[in-house]
Image (cartoon, rainbow, N blue to C red; front, side, top):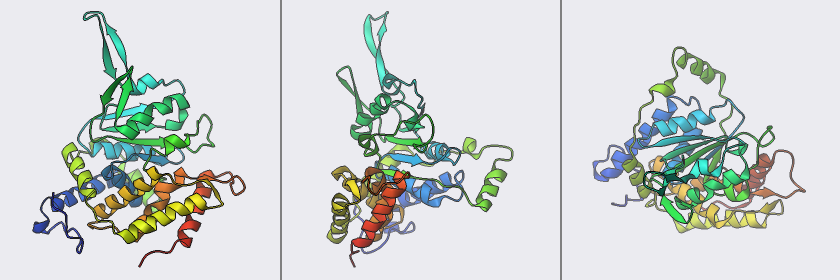
Length: 332
């Protein structure tokens, strides 16, 4: 696949760009398709697309009724391929997620029955309402793209993306996700309440039907894989890499934090920045891409020191990260 000239942006009308031009159009179609259902939240939609094209997983955290599950459904319905929804409850078992071997009396052999994780897009709804044991069933799948059952490794379909929703940890009946689980999510975002005009539009759009029911796919599996590959060709200059690394190391040395960003988190921001540049029509990353994505990629990976922590842990991490970003010089 040809590498686009970093000196210019990707134009959807530039015939010399060839396949990248066609794929750039598909990115716009995907965002528009999701935007038919998710009103007034363009940044949330963009971050969801970035996670998909970067080959990462997405965690959506907010209070009930904001549109977390709707966003996940809209992303899944916009893509051709298989989709599975797992409603995480206190009695859900790991085998419900990954699958199990069942004895077949006719063949007198054990046959593997795939669980819900064997889909291109998996919606893990209210992931923090199940036990840590069941939550951990996702770890291998999210990190390696396969699951191991009774000593046998089973590959998952590609592309593979987990879109998880969770309620704030102070809500009743929730189990906080462990740091190892949080670190598997490339991005975490919050939806927030819609503005009054957009909420009025939501009511009008749902007067006689749910627009989610009529949402049609606009991108197939091959195109997703091609875009993920194309995102990996986006140029990241040494100055931008150095800026990223200085932010990462500042999180590890900050007095306000007990746990800084892991190398997995460093790579996640690198990949996400490449995907964001591609979504915005550029063949190169800017320092602003790093700064813009730092909170969605890093905040859920940080642990705030108890001396500085308050009730809202997530808010504390974002505040600590904001202070770090102010202290690290942006390259010219």
